[in-house]
Amino acid sequence: MSPPKERRRDVDAAIFVDEVGIAYGVYEPFRLRSAYQPIFAPRDGQLAAVAVEGLIEPHRAGRACAPRTFFDGVPTPDRLYVETMCRMLHLRNFGNIGVDGLDLFFNYNPLVNDHPGRALAEIRLMTRHLADFDLHPGMLVCEVTEQAADDALLSRLVREMRRDGIRIAIDDFGTGHSTEERVGLLRPDIVKIDGAWFAEFCRHAAAERFFRPLVSSLHDRGAKVLVEGIEQPGHLRVALEGGVDLLQGFLLARPALAGTFFDEEPLSVDALLGRDSKVVPLHQRR
Image: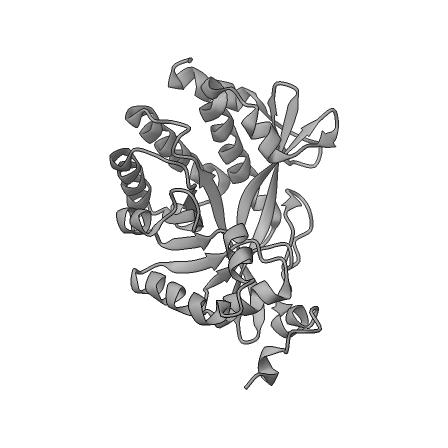
């Protein structure tokens, strides 16, 4: 693997800007584009966009391909390079959303870089670039994915980001290594409930009764709770009645490529719940 400085130069050299000012990355035959999916907070019967998650949409020969297929095909020695490129694209393109006051969530895979010095250098590189894009650390939320990782290294990386002012989220809670033990280890600001796990959970008749204590226990640990993968009105109902702080999913908004018009209008909870004829709007419940 090339030393860190060479990899960083490669990242800069592989990022270009199109005719409308949107940055994109080039890796092998792929063109990598930033997409952003809104994250909402419930407020007075509405859902207001308060953040976006940066995602990558890979294109090959002008056609979009599945992100999982792309990332699974990246050779191990190039994974840090590609992740760094993706993160830089999200930072560069975030201002094109054109909406003030939003936070930016980005993913961090702890297995991509298990060398302490190199991992810390990548984090410091990112924070040094923020001012170039009119960003500050308080706008960023790092989502630590559910991958296995050395606990001591992961704790050190989280301390470094938190010292810089970046907030920490545990992604995919309920699956893999995103457990209560990791919550205790990292003391995250936000816990993201895995969408597939939550959808299965919502199939149980007592879902609402059992979900609220889980949310309360995470609140007691000082974490906000975000449910991702909200795809059906029933999912939204269970999440809201569980007292979650943040929501994300296709029912609310799909990811949109950087440069796409961002709709700032709040969403009506009753209108979303009313899409399912079996769901009674909240204001009619007793």
